[in-house]
Image (cartoon, rainbow over all chains, first blue to last red; front, side, top):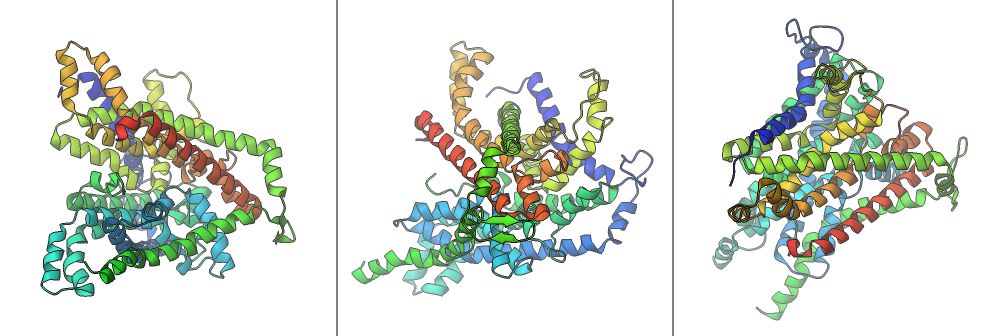
Length: 268
Length: 291
C-alpha cells in the first residue's frame, strides 16, 4: 500500500489538533492561578483543584455517579449474560426481534428515554430516587453489556464445555467453572464500557436526578448553566483524567477498536 | 438427542432471555407507551395534568410556527453536522488506515478516545475556545488572515455545528474505518499498475467501496445530533432552542408535561422513520457490498 503524502499528513495533523484542542484547553485552564477563566500564562496553580473540596455538591455527585455506574452495570450484566448466551447459542423464533429490542436503547434518543422514565417513575412514586436512577441506567447500558458478552459467547470454543459435560459437569457448575471463566474478558469489558456510559450520561439523567441524587455530569451541567468559572474546568479535568485511565486500561485489556466497533451484532 | 432434551432445548433460550425481556417490557416499553399517551392529555397552569384524550398539544405543534422553526433548526443543525463529519472524517479514516501499526493504533486511540470522555467536558472545551468575540478560535483565524472580523460562535448555530461535529466525529471515523477494513488493498495496487492516477483511484476505487461506511456513519451522526442535548444547551444558550432542549424546558421549567411529551414523541417518530427509511435505501443500493 502507498504511504501518506505530505498533504495527507498536514490534514491529519490539523485534524488531530482540532480533536484534542477542546479537551486540552479544559485541562490547561484548570491549572490557572487567576480567579477567572484564562490559560495559565504565569505559572501553574492547583488552587482550583483545592477549591473542589469547598464544594461538597461535586464530591457527593462524584460518589453518586460512581455508585450508580458500578451498580447499574453490574445489574445489567446479571440480565445480559443469560440473554447473550441464549442469543449466541440457539436459533429460535423471535431471536432477531429480541436482539433488536435489547439493542433498542441505542436507537431511542436519550431525551425521550429521560421523559419516559420521569413520567413512569413519578407515577410509580419513585420520582427522584436512587432506585429509579439505577433502573433507568440498567436500560441504557444494557446494549453495551450485551454486545461485548455476545461477542465473547459467540467466539467461545464449545469443545471445552462438551469435555466438561462428558466428565459429568452440568447446570450451575458448568456455567460457574467453565462457561463464565471463558467469557469473562468480554463480561469485564462489557462492565467497563457500560460503566463509562453510565458515568457520562447527562441527557437522560438530567430528567431523573433530584437534589441529593444528582450525578457528576448533571451537577456540572447545572453549574455551567449558571456560570462558567475555573472551578468547573478543574472538575472536568478530574473527570477526563479518570476516563482516560479507564480508556487506556480498556485498550490494553481488550482493544479499543473491538470495544467500540461492537463486533457482537447478531447476524453480521 | 432424546425428545425430552429437545423440548428442553426449545424452552432454554426463552428461559434465559425471560428476565431481560420482562425488564424491557416493564421499564422500557410501558414508559414509552405512557409518554405517547401523555402527549394527548390536557394541561393548565393551575389545574396541572388532566388525563383526558385531547389533540390540543398536537394542534399547537402543527399550527404554531415556533415549533416548525424549532424542528427545522434541529434538523438543519443535524444535517450540517453530518456533512461536516463526513467531509472531514472519511479522509481522516483513510489516512489513518494507511499508517503503519504503532502510529495507527496510537492515533486511533486519540481520535476515538473522546467518544468516551464526558460530553459536558468536551462542550465546555469549545465554550472556552469560542469564548466571546476574542476567543482563541477567533484570534487564531484572524492571525492566520482567514477572517477579518470575529465570527460569533457562542449562542449561534455555527458554534453548535462545530462543537457537535467534534462530539460526533469519532462515530464517523469508526464507521468509515470499519468499511476500510473490508477493502482489499490489492485492488488499489491493481488500479495503479493499470495506470490510474491517485485522483482516479480515490474517485473510482476507494469512494464507491467506503460509501456504505460513510452513509451508515451519517445515519448515526444525524440521529444523535438531532436529539443532542448537552452541546446545544451549553453552546446555544437559553434562547436558541432545539427539540431536546425545548422538551427539557417544558418538563422542568414550564412544567407543561403533555406538550413536552408531544415534542419528544414527534422527535422519536421522525427519527425512527428517517433512520429506518435511509437504512432500507442504503441496503438496497449497496446490497452487493453487504452480502
